[in-house]
Amino acid sequence: MSSVEAEMEPLTSGASNRIIPVVKAMRASLIFIYTFFLSFLFFILPRRRRLSSSAGPPSPKKHLRRRWRVRDEEDTCRRRALAEDVGMGRHQGCFRWTTFIFYGVTNNALFCRSWFPLADHVKGILIIIHGLNEHSGRYADFARQLTSCNFGVYAMDWIGHGGSDGLHGYVPSLDHVVADTGAFLEKIRSENPGIPCFLFGHSTGGAVVLKAATHPHIGVMVEGIILTSPALRVKPAHPIVGAVAPFFSLVAPRFQFKGANKRGIPVSRDPAALVAKYSDPLVYTGPIRVRTGHEILRISSYLMRNFNSVTVPFFVLHGTADKVTDPLASQDLYDKATSQFKDIKLYDGFLHDLLFEPEREEIAQDIINWMEKRLFTI
Image (cartoon, rainbow, N blue to C red; front, side):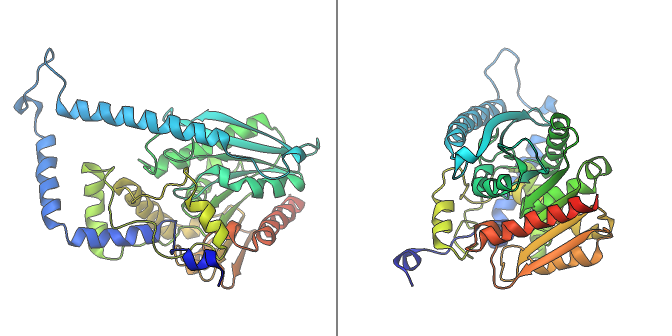
């Protein structure tokens, strides 16, 4: 075992392992729940029972909102500056790249990147939707490999991620991320008429892409979707989580459960990849926020109930040793989806972050081969 491996503490990312510790905090927090319940009742009391004055000082609630807004703006400016400095991949002279801002459905500024081959001929375009807590810049080497095969690449940071607006690690609505994905796809198609487009999503990003593709107006715009380690079966460790998560997400959406941190199951068998990920200031490694966790549970539950409504062509890839998301759920998706063009590949012994495993280039080539096979059929 190398010295790097010996000194490494187990690290993790993704959805499920960050949600499981939530139940431990909840079961030990009945008084906490009761206190928030009373606070909730207070906040929904009629306005006539509150002390207010238009000429007086701002209410504590408005003051808190102002503080949140200032903190969000400062956090966004810091992250956006860091995002602009992220390298766009090795051998930058072999492709052209750019960064830009796209305004989402809620008018939030979303930080985006693109990579294109120098050659005029582009076979297709892949749009990358990253996973929970990471950012689009991590996929620069994957984009380089795609451009070497004459594919163009776009990538978008979610709200609260990378260089985009919002508090770091806070996702108020995954439905908004789904809608932003559809709007981003529509923009790219309008700017690149006649070029086939594919959507790619990793982990929770895979859940976002899959839900987006089930919307008819989005599904018709893509030739297929690629999902790596999708978060399709994320369940709470105890029924109490499902019962109180909606309540907590309303009264304390930004609250962080201190028991849910980055310690846990490794996501790559490459120690250097783990060090790079968790030393990256644009990767959120803090405790999961309540609303974010609830949104993951909600989208996972929706998708599990609707596998048979999936008709879009897709390729799902999963490591059999993944302990963050469930490879059996990917198999269920493949078995139950009614898509006429679908494929699955399970990598024996591989972990969660497939494109950061030691065999990352072979996995990327599997994705490229699938897209080329799909293009041959249309």
